Length: 240
Image (cartoon, rainbow, N blue to C red; front, side, top):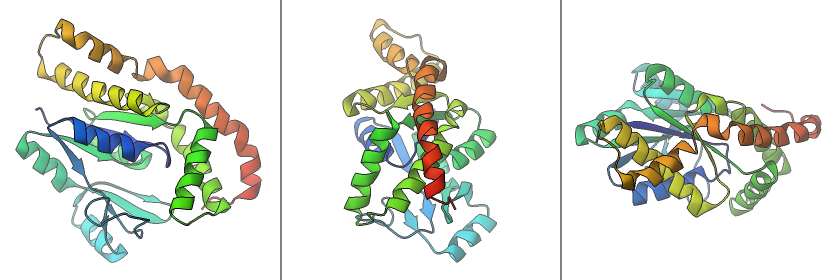
């Protein structure tokens, strides 16, 4: 293992958590960085598993001590990645997965340009809206304003897709998991310096199909669907 840092970002509702959990379950040698946040737990979220839930004062004190690899403000709440996770993964000879938003990803990429960045896209605006409504009902937060705000925020995040190395359109779960695993395997192989074997060819081809230049056209189509709907949303919701 070479201590590769994998950054995974996605709009809320794109299936990022499910894909990341499956990646960690299926691929050995991967550690996960549990982010710190000042927001309250949602639904079945547990402290230390989904996030480290801390007070605003605790977060600001950690930031002042330089304990975050990155941190960002999202919807008025703070999120941050602890440096200790990267240090611990490297000591074990593991790679590290970061589940962070586009603000945090930009910060990490600036500090560590060798990091591998992966952006997960919903197949369409309609599918994302359906997933957000299902999540809101499960969290007992069936608020039209919250859904519209998240859709507007999704559009803003998707506009940053071209800053990522890989784009994964999450339209079929098993297919998406296979491609996410392929990206990790391809990057490990590339950085090991080993010569690819014939058995590596399908994995490398799957990873290559997710490279930004090969997915740009579809990503633009998905982004365009958000742009077409945005005109009506702006009149309904004031984004904070």
